Length: 251
Image (cartoon, rainbow, N blue to C red; front, side, top):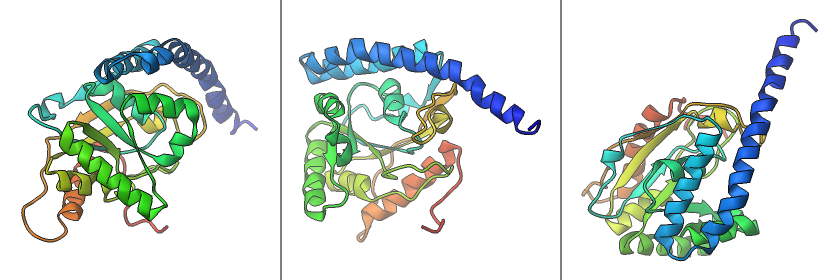
């Protein structure tokens, strides 16, 4: 019993902060999210969503440090690719990046009606992971949007697991960028796994750091351009996310 007491005390000590943080997040969300949904104009909605996200971080006393904003291209569209360690990652990038991005999100999220309404109003794009025909259609739509004026954010791992480490990247983000002829901006997020681990629902205080690397173009050589771009971008994200490489882990 004595050896387990410190661990139990540590777990119990997290509850006051977690309760306060969830109170802040749900209160701000309940007041502001309906306004985001109803507000006319996509840019206005994205600007307000960024402001709301920042208020949540401020209210929860969560420091958010963003480095490398100057690396975001200013003369055209691009694809952002970031590591995915937490359910909070979308909120983090909404707060950290300028309000000109649409997230590319797995279609399962669209089954939750309030989330679907909000994300659709913010110009997010849902992709089907398990139906090849629907996935191909979604990929064509993403390329069209990337060409026509929207910068997209992908979590290229496609999911996250409780165990630390960067998972292999899926090809979709890089096929979209190469097909649309636009660059990819690698982004490393640190502190996000500690903030909200897995599906536990327990918010913990964490210092969040977003590290934006210079944009990378697909090379001009023939062959699997998207795959080569994926591998180059993943190496940069791995260097900046602060966790180990899980690409060679057994399934």
